[in-house]
Image (cartoon, rainbow, N blue to C red; front, side, top):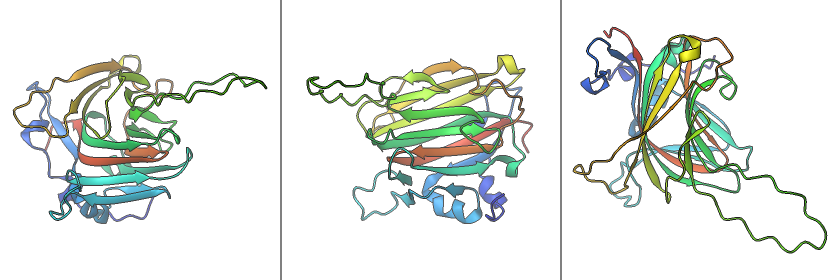
Length: 266
């Protein structure tokens, strides 16, 4: 357990506006976490997030009217280094006791992913502290892994450099969008998790690519991808942590996040 201070309940409970109600009147979603990342420093001070990793720069941005190119209000996460570089922002759900998360939404801008260090960014949920081995949800922005090549022989002609593959969006290892287009790319992610018995658990990702200069009048269609939970061979009943994980050299602007669980509300 880290020695961050106990989270201020007032910050956890901007709780929840009518937009976090599910469509069915019978079911109500209780807000576990609602974040406007322009207030990152406030959240860190309150202990809402643990920051892990050495090759990391993290700062609130977009609120300075004199910084013309500062971008949208949010929090910028930058990792620098090789393939081994990684950093995480971690929120312990219900102070570590966990919850059956039923919906997770996030808005972000992927500004750069370095192809040489296989840069990736993941929004995920885990049922234990080893997030790679204990993930039940992983929505990842990444380029495809490079294909292995045959060993070169003496006298082989010089190789042409491989074209840089496009950035894709994946959910639990399955491609949801093969090409997000030129970076920076703004994404809206809306994940619904259906628990039930282990064999029938389901993850539904709806995603939208939002133009960087968007007007309120524009209607953007959402695309949908359905898969199982990421881990199926271990028994678990709750998600204990929400994590934002960057590997390689990346720059991502976090805009907002909402995490809900089914419940009666307060």
